[in-house]
Length: 120
Image 1: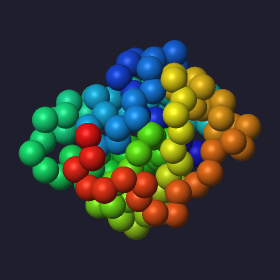
Image 2: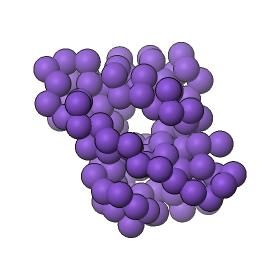
Image 3: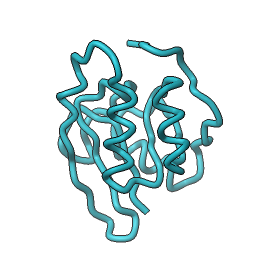
Image 4: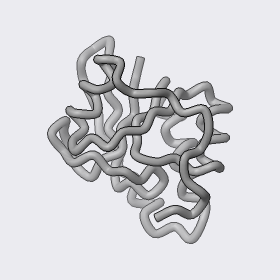
């Protein structure tokens, strides 16, 4: 399974970003291969609207089965949920910390958005 993480960096030691739609990058970690790729999300950093929806569509297109982020708004949640993507939130400081929390079962799956739309 592939897991998407929100980040501003290019590796597992990169800072974890608590924003979803306006996260600068997504790190997609493949649990089966123990490898990752980083994808740019710059087009949504300054979007007037729709950043969460567009980012959710990107995560689905990249084949992620789960998303680990700090917060997820209602519109992004709907798109991710419809795509069958599990959503987890954490306050981890790095992507590696978030991944370890996931692997050790410390993260709880969200069953609803945890912030209002247009949260910054």
